[in-house]
Image (cartoon, rainbow, N blue to C red; front, side):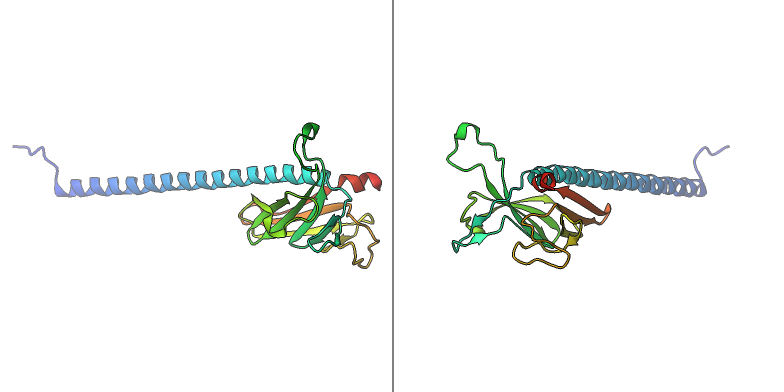
Amino acid sequence: MRNNGYTLIEIMIALAVFAILSVITATSMYQSFDIRSRLNLQSNQLNEILEAITLIKHDTDQIIDRAIINNELLMFPPFTGFPQYLEFSHGGIVNPNNTEPRSTLQRVAYICDKSKLIRRTWDSIDIPIRDKGLDKVIISNLNECKFSYISHSKHIFEEWRDYAVQQNQKKESIPLAIRFNFKFEKLGSIGLDFAISGTLYAA
């Protein structure tokens, strides 16, 4: 009489095949989810960079040669730049028919703070309350962040101060362009030059 049941060896072989297929399927699914997660992360980072570029371009187009009065009632230059901090006077804020009781001018700063690029603004162009600036993170997850400044003679400087003229630098209140240097873990290094419209036309 023939036994139609499975032998122990057949069951063990079937279980082994099932285990191998399960491992292969789980590995493939994990890799798919991992690739999708990394692609989403890179896509979000690229979108963040593009939005930041648009904002920086708008700001640099609106930089004006307008000194301000600081908290000590002293004149502060229109533009000041350091490797991790730059600040300037900005024009062109929308105020249709002067409906808002404020100037269309604004003081703006960009700050490299650890792994973030921050844009800071103040409500008042003159005598701004320094610790009352409004901060907005426009790029996150940076490995490096640094600014440099291009003069009309095309020399690059790490600092830009109206009262401290460096070698190869003429006395200029505003640079020709600002270079934003970023380094990302996945995307590598990016250097972006933003011409300052007013000085470009003057040149």
